[in-house]
Image (cartoon, rainbow, N blue to C red; front, side, top):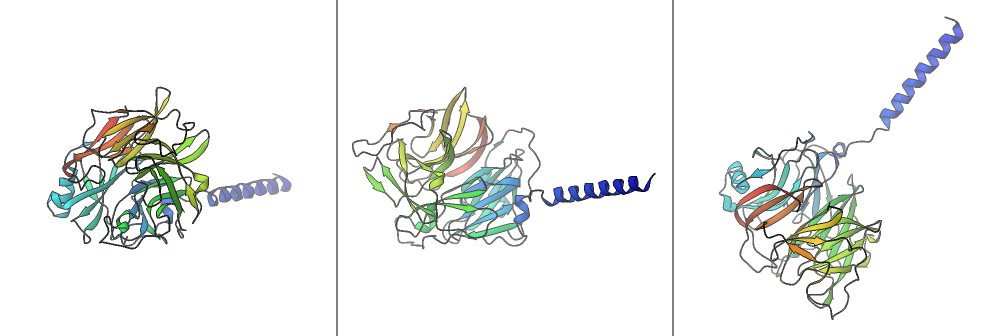
Length: 382
């Protein structure tokens, strides 16, 4: 081999090594890699949402924070159906209490494994211990070890102060719902601002959380503009090529808020585009397509589960007049085969998870904790 040939071969090999090194160095860091092992100091466990790589976000209203947890649950699902009865009883047995001391707060489905994660409280009242458990299709229930788990915490600078004497302590609704969108965690709930209804956008990996966007809406059932009522549940939703947050409130307006308007500390007027009626609290929403049409499945305390026809949501006329009250906007069908639904969570494009239990005492717009048994089941989206 000639000397020049050797040199060229060596240079080519060196260039290949450099290119491989650069490719490896620019490989995206997993979402879980941003989490450090240790104690996740949760004061409460409420709203849940999944991000990439099996990272689970837990809303801690009492702590005024969001905690990201590494579930280490990244094995792809094999299509198993969920049908687990008495989840509250299984959790109670796991932590050594009676089922009436377990309160289920929220559920989320891991998009990779399709295992279900449940946030709960052991005990009732301010001293209740937060729990996060994994439920597998086999019925196996495992508590996440919050004392030593990969995690990161971000505090909410605008969390409201506790007021146990209030009709509803605003601290308990600091975080009402969450969703992960385009690298940001969207967090709805109450704040300490003038317009206390807030929607926060927090970049992940966590650094700090800026003040939330303050929200005002026209509430047709109440016949007035409101700024003190929190979003109860929301979904990211695209209309006419633009990204929105579609939010539902108590008594029951549906409101669209452009994601481009979510700026720290700004005051934004949401556009009410539908109203399901008074005396009701929305619980969860699942958007989907079926047979070429758009729908949103909505679980409610008073109206049960309804299937909202959503094809025209992007062009429906805003509801902003005192003359428009109660039910208005997009039509919906009641799904009478689904009863006592306490939570909904999307599994995939064709299936959802339903959590059923007997509704607790209290008015329909603000019922107390449900009573067991609490059951999990996979359903086909109707």
